[in-house]
Image (cartoon, rainbow over all chains, first blue to last red; front, side, top):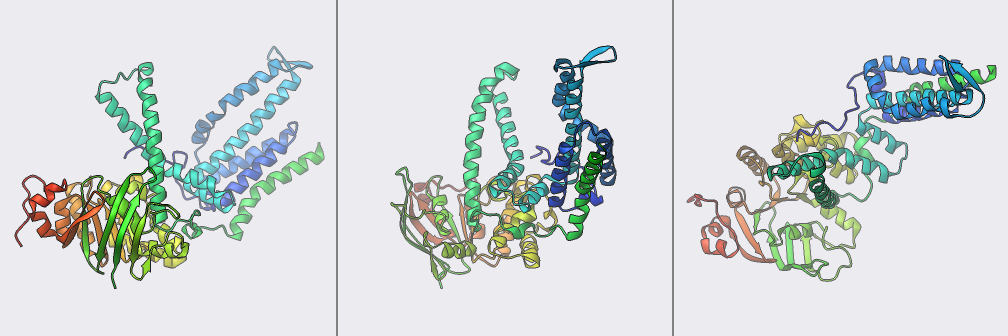
Length: 256
Length: 252
């Protein structure tokens, strides 16, 4: 117990975006990202318009800008790559702030940076407005293979249980004078990991038996989650985002 | 009609260990029976036979028949097994094994949804089962945010939602604090269902079940009124069972 919540990304709220059915949000996010990735990197105004769409969505969903900024730090490793490209790419060079950089590298870096950022932001908005469980329900309704959604569902449920077991095992080790300093901890930690794996394995078997006892035959019954199926209006609302982005792309291309 | 009839049930695990050496037992509708026995007596193995989880189809080394009401468990008959599993509700010892979905409501709905219920009818089943164990207010909570006592009550609700004829509970009182233990007993006493309770908590058996059977080394070694069995100190000692220190069977 007390191992925390399994939905650390969710920002609780009751905005129109929160109330959209999960499958609509997932489909819209994926399509939006595809449009963004398909946009030629030279089409600067289009990226500005995409950013505006994301900003409007964030305001609609009442997701704080600070939260988005903090969470998008996950992108940093890619940003580092993008920042290096102008210095290592070959080809004609130009001068920025007194530094000589490759034009091609500059464009490549910009390409990674802007598309990555927009993709991360839209994914964050999805995560912020959809509890993890609903994301899985949405994926299931979008015909994702059940092997994948069920594994993720179990992870969601049992991560806390496992973390709790690991914590108890560690405390038990400490109580028997295990030296908690980093390197010295490794032996005990590694052995503990093996034990934890066995426990998880055995628990998996018991969970499966308990499920079979209640009539499980390999598929989760759809009736469990039929409450919040997407309506035609929800699909239309969700489609507005990628359709708008695609329109921007088409208009932008024709002016290029 | 008999609620549960075991006839000479034998079972050998694939590794050669024989867990059940011919168990015969008869439980009448409405009876509450405690299945007592030390660790390793074969209690859990027996429980898994009651709804056809064991034996696996085509496995040698198993024998005998299990009947629930008018149906006999046949591992090869899938439709028949589904009906057996509706009739026999197993509540496992660790509620974390039983509750595997992210919210209590979904988990309680899992069994009846597998039976083909949906929509409003499914919702009513869930509400009814949670009300029966006094857990209606945790419906939308996540199982790992509940106390062990609450989780065990929800686990009972997950099988009550299938409206079983026979409720089988594996060590229901283990690790519960005294209050949670008493609350669970009150809930069980309030249920209108045939009960088979596996335990080595002898006072709990006395409180809940008028009749007890003792299972040891894969055989039924005693069957009678719980009060009489618990008063027989020699019998208990022979089968590694003991009353808690200071406990005496109250005189009726």
